[in-house]
Length: 214
Image (tube, rainbow, N blue to C red; front, side):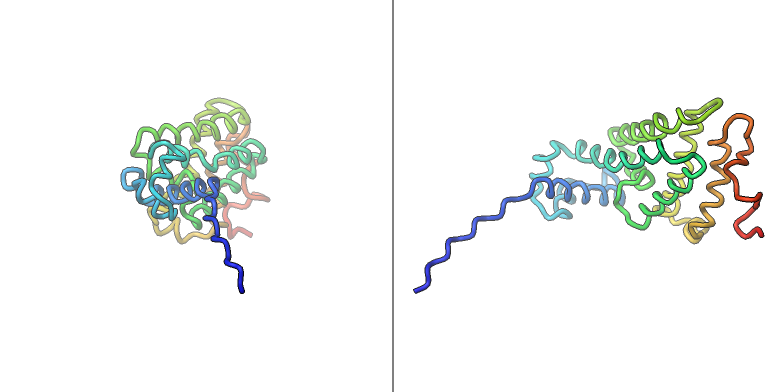
């Protein structure tokens, strides 16, 4: 005679996995619909959990979205602090285009669509200051280093926004090599040291003037 099988205990929910799922869902929905267009019910449904867990893990909708904005900044801050300046535009552009190809990953260009909320704007501003103001500006020489660092942020973020959110035809159709060429040209004066205002040390090898130059 078979021995009755003891009932299986309900599997304990993995709190870390649930929290990560909520953040991922909030990040994607916020990037698509903005803060006002995303509810905690939407986030919970997308993550496959009860709405009450949003408040258990984050306390409020505002705190959830604030954490979304903060998320993913550490890697970019490290790259901005350590990447050789001539290579930095290429690295940042690559990251921006990766985020375009994988929406909802927390890029600044995606998050600016959600910046109709004071709390989110404050955290985006803090993220830019921590990445470009604190990490890049001290590496630059000459005048207006904070402004030049923020202009670089605006350039890269704007390209990601136009390609990923607006879909402007030329930027959307351009391949990464061509975009990288023009980004290098535009960023060179922002990164150049005093006495090299033309950014020649950051330009194309051998004095090339375009991607198809011999």
